Length: 296
Image 1 (cartoon, helix red, strand yellow):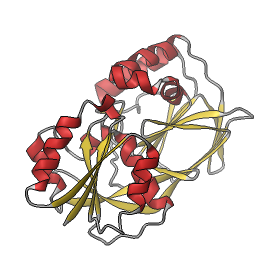
Image 2 (spheres, one colour; image 1 turned 180 degrees about the vertical axis):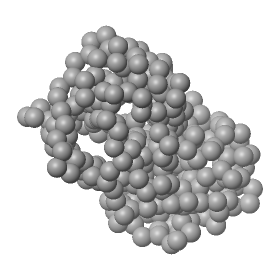
Image 3 (cartoon, helix red, strand yellow; image 1 turned 90 degrees about the vertical axis):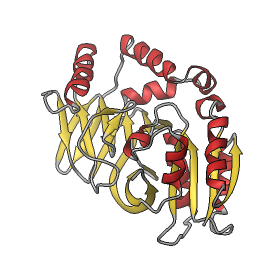
């Protein structure tokens, strides 16, 4: 079996190089594997385009959650066809690493290598947002403001700390534009929408009972986001692992929702990365699936 390992050196400021190399060496003992260290999406995109041409059966991505999201979208965009046993593997080398929790991965080198060389794979549910797909979550509004305000150079140095600092800044200077949310025949004015395909959010904090392998996603609609309410929401996540006890948060398990910025551009983040802004957003279930390797 032939492996392609792409290491996004921009993740975690490139501090995981030795860790990645040890996993590479472990896999290399019994398998053919090529290691590519990339510093731009252009480099990574070219490698992914040639996955089939080079007969790779495993695409291993070392980086953050966004690295996996990017690769999956590149595979779909280029309409790459692969065999049923093709799978994506993940090495947690980013900031939040929510996917690490979803896949049951540890940071033990031998255990990671064992998972990546196994056949323990499952098809992940992919959710479509406009012309892209996400694996974990999409945030429209408040949390996307935080993601978009972070300088990538500073993120490399400070890691998770910068999310805390910027989150506190946006908490103090909270300013939300209303978003019109349309679900079936219902319309709701909201300050923030969070669509979660993952059990976890903001690190390894449980937020819902779904997971990336189930064919559904949970949508939280925050009608009136204020500082004190946000603190209450954080308490609910830490204490109960969901937001169901809040009367000001609408929870929906639906297959489609539409959002309108009411003539304003709405900031968006998908899988923890900046997805720009748009005044029209459609999120829907999709029939796209891809195999992910997970810990036994």
